[in-house]
Structure formats: structure tokens, C-alpha cells
Amino acid sequence: MPHVSDPNARPPLASGQTSAPARARTAPDQTPLPPEQGAVIKRLSQEMGLHATACTAAFIAGNHPDIIRESAAFIRSLEAIWAEEGLDPTDVWTELLRRIEVGDLFLRLNQPPHRKKQNGKAVRPWWVATSKLP
Image (cartoon, rainbow, N blue to C red; front, side, top):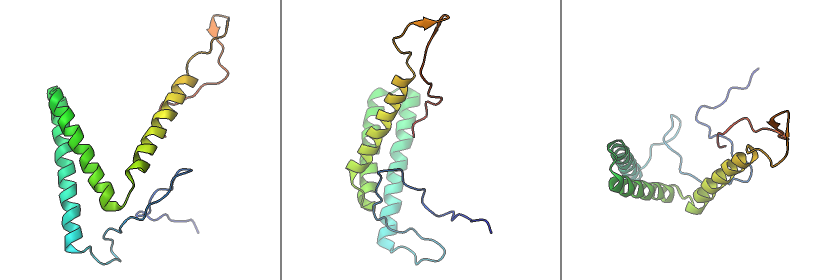
């Protein structure tokens, strides 16, 4: 019998990642969230959406001061969500730094080496075929 995956399951963690205990969301077989927690989740979601929308509108309008202000507000909203979920902000910033470093590594690996050309083409020991970050 083929294995059927759970649509509500979290994706597997990458090597070296740790999972922080997150509060369970309402699922068909679980009890609903307390009203206070539901109100906090709703408020944080609305706040984050407001700042994301305002940042996007400022970007479209080319309003640099508003982009800066709304980007900062969006990041503050993210930090509030991380706190609500019990996540350590350093874990998120470390993951972001890891992705930047991997992207920089791919960029360096795709640069032609400082070798002589053979038949008019630079010799590459190998080629990274993607620019997508993990």
C-alpha cells in the first residue's frame, strides 16, 4: 500500500536545523484555540499584512522613506510572531545568513577559474546549474 503523506505535516528540517515547540493550530481533531490566543494571532496577522501591503505600495510608488519605514515595521511584526511561537530570533537570522552564504558560494563556483583557455573557452572543473537558494 503506498504511503499517503499528511497534508498538515510540517516539511522536514534541513541538516543542522532544530525545531522549536510551536503551539498547535486548530485542526479537525483538535480543540479550538483559546479566545485570547486566537485574538493575538488575528492581530499579529493583520498587522503583518498591513505592513507588507504598505511596503509593496511604497515600492510601486518609488517612495523610499516609506519603503524603509514599512520594511522596519514588517520585520518588527515578524519578531512579534516569532515571540508568539516561542522561536529564537537568532535561529531565523542564522538561517538567513546561511542562505546568503550558500548563494555567495554558488556565485563564486560559477565564476571562471583563473586558468588558461583551451580552444577559446575557459576550463571549468564543474558547473553549478542553479542559482536558487536552498
